[in-house]
Every structure is written in structure tokens, then in C-alpha cells.
Length: 245
Image (tube, rainbow, N blue to C red):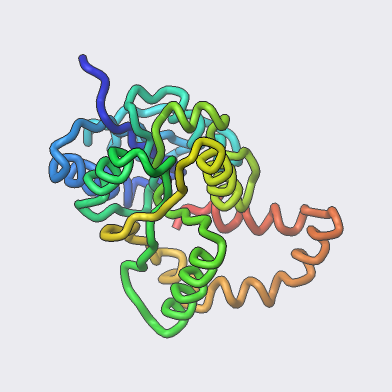
């Protein structure tokens, strides 16, 4: 079989409720683009039906046991056969023009890769505040995340995602941006498509979730700045690596 144009990497930890809709959004985008795509779901310590559902949806499934989202993504990148790597988290979705726009931007030769704008699947006052804060941060830094995309050769050249437990997205965007600058190309963001960001944590724990956590865990963040990451790591495990909501 001829190698696909895209390899879409989807990290998943007990995502039986969301994996099918994520895969469907990728397939819709590939059909709209008229380009081939393999979908790789990397199951991270899954104990539910994530693997079964992903395989029924036609995805290729790999396993990873690390408590590091970057390592999970890198497992998929190393196994990928596509010319272009795209990553998306399992509870999120991409809009149907995403892969077409990525292909068009890369075809210009002006871009090393990029990210995507993030839009919540529903909105409220605190979610609008969260959205505006993220937009301002991305605009100021240029370190767009959400959906990551670049040629596979580029990801391999930079060593894949920066393997750290948190803020790996910003660190990886910084590496890609620096690599692009060295090769005369820009790190950019999609203009017409975006990541549809899941609100499941907000649905469960309240729309002011991250603002509240910043206040409640101020001491843990200060201790982490001084070198003691135990409190922050425990928070990350609860919110991400052990979360099954």
C-alpha cells in the first residue's frame, strides 16, 4: 500500500466516549481534502474500550504506558508512514477543512509547520475569558498549539515532541519555530480552520475550573518554581494522566 499523505496521531487515555467522534472528524477532513490519511491512536494505559472502538473505526492502535503526553505522541510519530504528521487530542475534533489547509500551507514552501486556533464546543462567560486569554497568549508568543502539524521529516529532525510532563506543547512549538527560522521558513497557524476543544472537564468541575485551580494551587506552583514539583505533578496526574471523565 502506498504511504499516506497524512498520519494523524491521537493520544488516548480511557477515551471510549470520545474516540469515535475524533476519528470521524479526521476522516471527514481527509475526504474533504481528497488526500489519504492513516489514523494512529496511541492507547496510554487504557482499561476501557478505547482500543476496541478505535480499531472498529479503522484506526491503527499502538500502546504506551508513560505518564507524559509528549512521549505518547512520539510513539505515534515514530510509527507513522505519512509524509505529514498531524496531532490532535482524543476528546477534541478538527473542522473539515483542516487537512486541506495544512496541505495548502505546506505546499507553498513558506512554512515549517504550525498549530491551530482553539474554539470551545460551547461557551459561557468564564470560557470566553479562558478563550480570550489563550488567544492573547498565542498572539504574543506565536507558539500556536492545539493541532500540531509539520512534515514527518521535520518532527524526526527535531526529535519529536519535547518530552516533559507539562507545557510540552509550548516547548515543542518553540523548537519547531526555531528550526523553521534556521531553515528560512515560518511557524504559523491555520487561518480558516480550528480545533474544536472539548469542555468535558468544565462540564464536570465548573467553567471557572482553571482560574480556580490557579488560586487553590498557588502554593504548589510556588514550590515547583523552587524545585519541588510533587504538588504540581499530583495535580497534573489528577487533571490529565489519570482523568477519566
